[in-house]
Image (tube, rainbow, N blue to C red):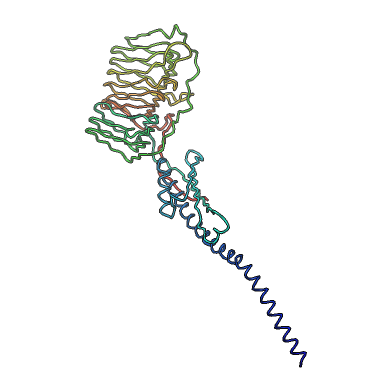
Amino acid sequence: MSKLLNITASFRRFLRDEGAATAVIAALMLPVIMGMAGLGIDGSHWVAEKRNMQTAVDAAAIAAAYELGNGSASEVDVAALKEATYNGYNESTDTMNIDVENINSTTAHVTVDITHPADLWFAGIFVDAVNVGVTAEAEVTIISDGTACILSLADSETHAIRTSGSVTLSMPNCGMAVNSSDDEALFMNGSVDIVVDDVNIVGEYDLVGNVDFGYNSLRTNSSPITDPYASLGVPSFTPCTSAQKKGKTTYNSNTTLAAGVHCGDFTFSGNTNITLSPGIHIFDGGTLKVTGGGTLTGNGVSIVSTNSPGSGSYGSIDISGSKTIDLTAMTTGAMSGVLLYQDRNAPSSGTNQITGTGAITLNGTAYFPSQEFNVGGNATIAAGAVPCSRIIARTIVLHGNPRIGNNCNGSTAADIPLPGSGAVKLIN
């Protein structure tokens, strides 16, 4: 019996001693246990925050891609911020980065990254900051919505395309594009009646006076249109000498001008008929000036204005008066589809024109990348089919009743595609 009592007493002492040790261990482990529990709670919260921010970044990427697809590149950041904020993004604490990558001429990727500082409850005991990062990538396929016949290349010019005097222009199958970001990039003033297809303006437009402007669709704050002839240079030729460039050749009777290099200034005046033989006509260091009545015709021609190294100056093309003009571009060779071409090295201060009271038909591209081009005429007396016209210049002035059309079947003039709607999808 006494042995049993001794065993019981020993066991009680053991429990008492072990309990004390366990209490000490428990006291020491309690902060660790609570810390681990706290990290678990914080971690669960961070996962929820990341899920919520993923919704915001997905919405931002899709919104940005839609703006890009609709031709509103300048609105990409605004649209992304708006949708991200609507879905929980806080501009005062979070950061967002937007990157646009053009994959090819019709496809682009928009990547949006958002970094969000996570809430620190228990974890703040151990770390100063934790950031939650999320990414989304959207792909947009741009579907062309038409073709422009008129394109101004100036990127910031006021009145990059403008009207002068009374203007009537009907080209319902032709679009118009203005690459200037100015608030008055497109400016119409006076008695104006213009009907076009789609209009694409990087900046804005202004209408003053009695203006009737009809269009199928109009986009402002849009993306600039690519110059389809950006890589086209002056064809190779034997340059004129400095002495030849000082020459002034005048014709005041019916004339057929052979293709080739023409040195210095050339003037055609009077009530005469002028025929340009097929081929490339290079005017080196001088101006081509045509006035008076009669006709100016050429089939399969390309008129190039340049200035070879040495003396001389970059001339201009100056055609006015009452001549009936009917010119068609060549369809083969380096200048295929290009009717009028001015060297892109010409100073921006120059002006070129084909205006007057006669019927003017331009089948092909008139290209003046560095200077202004004035186009006019009187289309009411023009005969024949609608032409295939492309007017591309730094700035453009519309006069009178120009005859511009998009009847380009069989033509080699380069298209000027306008952006349309965009098919958007998340790819990451």
